Length: 382
Image (tube, rainbow, N blue to C red; front, top):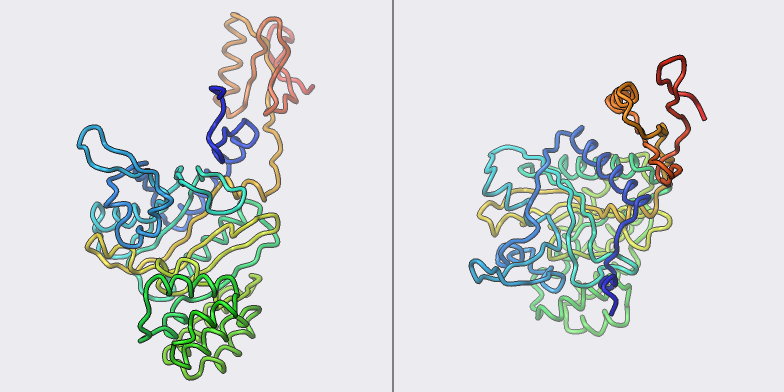
């Protein structure tokens, strides 16, 4: 095998895409900061028991594992940063009020989590801790939409749901965990035949309610249909009314609802949302409420937030124009060096052409040149 061959679904990022990714990263962090979110930088690896405890258990098969040569303990390369940020909130900050945190960094996946996905996503996310009210859910989605709009995404759709609907239907149903997992998979796949087989021993109300969910997707009118279909299930009316109120907070967004979509059911505890855009094979953004995320760290604080992969985001937004630059000759002339330094201090990009070479750069638009004129170095349009 050639020494330059990389593992499957791992790739170098070349200049054009790298520049775009970095510009998006800076923009996302600036947007989060404008909402009052503080940046944290969790480590790339941790002890396995920290990464995979609580809600992190779902990431077991996605986590690369190795042995720490110092302690002999098992380590994991993070597959998601949300669990780490919850640990920071619980133990390192330990604040009593509302805490807003954001993060951005690479994560590693042992397998792909969607078709054509990189196994080394660049994850950006934001979390708000300490507020149990729906205002935190609204803020999380508001920030998510500000981020995708700021990145240049257009024509996107926001899909809403709430895991408490399925939990209400399954309340009191004694079922093996493996069967429960298959039920959730059948709901997500809209598999009516498979769902019927899995739930044939369930109480009638639960069985009929779960089947009804397979048809409850579409615009906001779905919530009215759900109120009728699930009228006999305690707890669902309150959740449906909450979703109606939540929808009114985003009058300009293109909203859809899918009450059978329970992806992340072991993770989310309430409202969940996903942002879809043309050209993306899966959701650009996933988020919602996950109050139990910090429980294993001793602080079961209310929490809401979202995350996205910047490498996926860059594939669906318009390419950006090349950065304007100034071409300058290479030389030892003191005035030339001073002129170049002054231009760079003003924020200009100055590319020096080395002897025997033309300007061999593809990522800059050298639309001007630094040339001698009347004993001085001046910038002229090319």
